[in-house]
Image 1 (tube, one colour):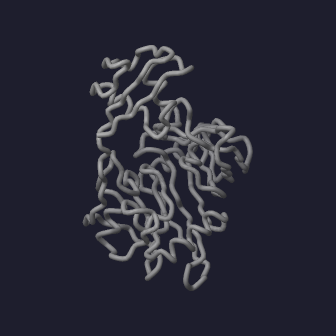
Image 2 (cartoon, rainbow, N blue to C red):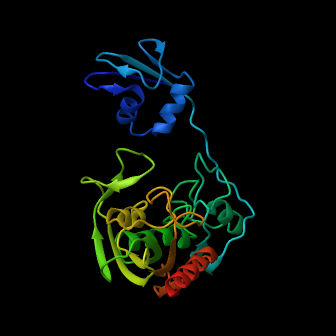
Image 3 (cartoon, helix red, strand yellow):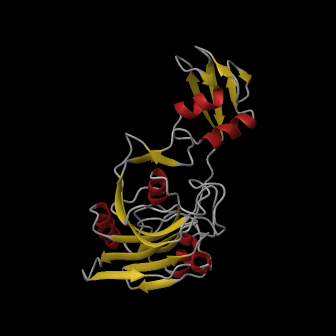
Length: 303
């Protein structure tokens, strides 16, 4: 256990909100759980989340030991598009988390990679071996995996210098009035919901290029090319211009198309091979549910 202390100076409002703002390293759900488990006291007394803090209130948090997450090899099928001694390109299905976390301790892409290969880069700590970049749990498609540290550094530098090619196919709500566009808007953690990212002035630079592929009246199929790789970037950017991705449970409307999460697929991935320096480009097919949804939309437009 770890005892955390905090004295209220000028902060006002609900205890849970004040603590979330004061301790940005902890999520609001963590703080809510500690309050529920009577691990938070104010002036020596157990206090509820809706307590209104006052100046000079003395707060103690009895923080439990953090859960130790260990990645273990699991025999989970992988759709391997390419593999050699340095790199793998994986076609990740919807619903698969990339690496273990407190909410997803196993069943991830990393667990599958560890079973498949005994050679993975170690730069991104013990729970993310081989992982150079990520895509969201309910986003499908291609991502690169490094099998040694030299390859990892080479691939990561291409991402940093915006030299890697990453194109996504997205189905969005609404009829986009122009054929192409560029969204240049900084992204950071939402101040209202820690599970979300948002457009914020002090966020990290984020640029998404998009081009219309097909129109269905109430929906538009677009290709998005990333120049940067921020968390939830395409989902945040398309919502920002008021064309949210269909099926997105976090950024989209409640009434949407039924699928396995957002209709977003990492279709094209290109990079320079870390050893041969060959320019390599890979593509993958849209998931079946994505393809079936497009067929239905085309039928509706035809009728």
